[in-house]
Structure formats: structure tokens, C-alpha cells
Image (cartoon, rainbow, N blue to C red):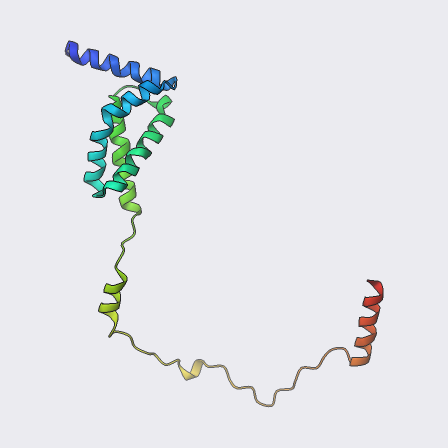
Length: 153
């Protein structure tokens, strides 16, 4: 059975959520103030980077306040925010591409390079005594066609 302190905390949280849904800036600041440090530490523990952890917490707040109407209140708001941070952090880890320093690639593969000759059988045959392409219009009719085109312009 919840104690009086827990009931009071839940009521205060429900009041903050209701006020935040009405775009009360003080309620939004209070929610951020209550959860910011814990959410940052959680994000940093997953991604191991302070800057990215800050981005994750900001993204969490954007998603949370944009979707505050969907918050049903079945769990605490802090639990909901925690889940958003965890999902965002793991999503960023999945999207990371493995990277390698260019110098280490040069050092490990410098001696592995090999020139492979192009197979002679696949080369195009040399053109031998092929007839040259003639213009489909002889020079005189071509001049007439050009003068007709110019007169129409």
C-alpha cells in the first residue's frame, strides 16, 4: 500500500504533467530539473560520450513533451522518460558505423597492394579497315537544309 509521501509525490507529478500539457513553462522546467541529471547519467553510461549523451537527453525531452498527450500515467513520468532515453541511446548505437583511423589502414595495408593485369581476352578488338561513317546528307543538300532552317527563324 503506497505511503502518504508516495501518494503526495504521485499527485505532485500528475499535477506537473497536467500543467505541462497546458504548456506551463514552470511545469516543464520542474520536470526537466527533477530528471535531467539522472537521464544524462543513464545516456552517458550507454553511449560513453558526454556530447552525445546531452543530445540524447535533449531528444528525449523533445519527444516527451511533443507526445505528452500520449502519456497515460500508468507508470511514473520518470519511468517514461527513462525508457525514451534508453531507446534513443540504443538506437544511436545501432546507427553508428564502425570507423577506422585512416593512418591505421595505410599502415596495415601498405604492403598488401597488388597490381592485377587486365585479362587480354576481354579487351575490345582493334578496329581494322572498318569503313568510315559518311554523313547521311551530302554537302550541297546539307547547305540547303541549313539555309531553310535559318530562314524560318
